[in-house]
Length: 258
Image (cartoon, rainbow, N blue to C red; front, side, top):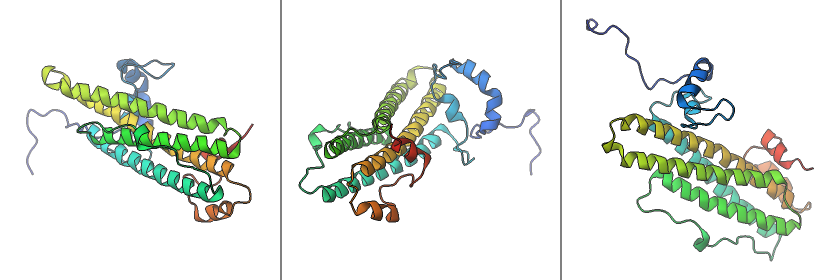
């Protein structure tokens, strides 16, 4: 081992170490003030920055901002794949329950186009927009089949999902502009990290809203199927199209009718 350097009077700080929710609560007022956040709205110049600085609930550090972004991208892609799978399952189930009715109505001409040279975030945004359009169309068809509007919480979950997609799209645009101007501004490297952290926070929120959209789709399917449908028994046994499982808090809140 080598003796410590004579000019090193302080231990090296690992910038990849994160803070737990308990640790960061002590600094929360100061961080909010520095970030320009409002005490009432929790928003400001850097929305999502404070939440992204904390560790995930499992307590594992995510490392650098790019590592955080990669982690939440993987989670969000998995939620998107499950939403796509469950939407296709719902279409198949409704086609069998209501023979002779056209369930799938969206054509490729009505879907958003992929930009040129897309990043993984760009692909995720377009894939989410496409799937959100298909799910919304399917919910409209469900209302026609049941001849009665679905519960308001279901529409709210889909509206919130679309809103978070647009927020993520805006954060990606900010990050792209920052990368383009990075070479011309001396403090660009700090801003680059900041924009990536905020983008990672937006992708994290998108992951959560996609999971709630899956729950909304499942609840809408249960409300639309005829009471005599054999799927009502088979679906509970196999767990298909059930993102949160029967009896979960999210499911109960969406199924609760006035």
